[in-house]
Image (tube, rainbow, N blue to C red; front, side):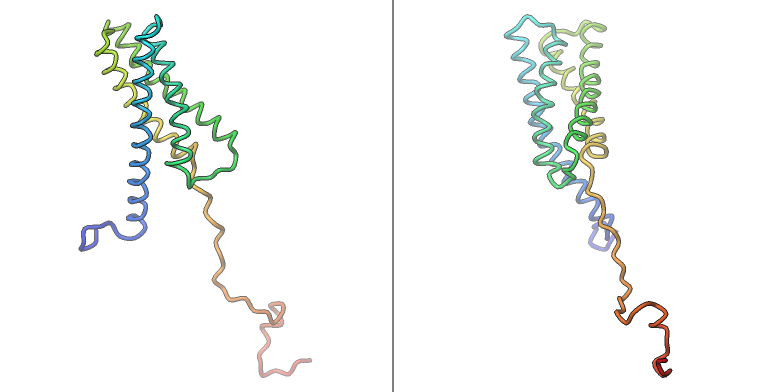
Amino acid sequence: MSPTGSVPGRAGVRLRRLIGELVKFGAVGGLGVLVNLGVFNLCRAATGLAVVRCSVVATVVAIAFNYVGLRYFTYRDRQRGGRARELTLFAVFSAVGLVIENGVLFAATYGLGWNGPLQSNVIKFLGIGVATLFRFWSYRTLVFRLPEPAPAVSTEPVDSAGPPAARRRDADQPVR
């Protein structure tokens, strides 16, 4: 650490970038949680679907919402080539997150018998939290990758005097 208490150099830049990314991911994710819980409760109140089915519907709606927020806000500076690849990976890792999130709810509902409205919301929220850890890691490292670093530029001066053999001649020697 420097005398001012900040992290020096590249580590400081990486830490600030990670914190900024976490804040943006959290903002999109926070809104996604509201969408998820809102659709979940609306589905439970308006339909006769089982708790976990309503949760899956809500999770799918939140995944679509989150993709837009992550692509155009959190990771807008990341690579944009290969949209099909990005969408495929996002769908695969989102599906894994869906299984994690709803697996927690399924275990609590059918394994422990916790299926009251408050219990379902608390367990769903916990499932979202566990799945979010997985999603953050997978989205940032595998889906929305950092741009490839620019190729290294040579700092060696360019000599336009000709091929290397011609440049090696001593200036005092006569040219033949």
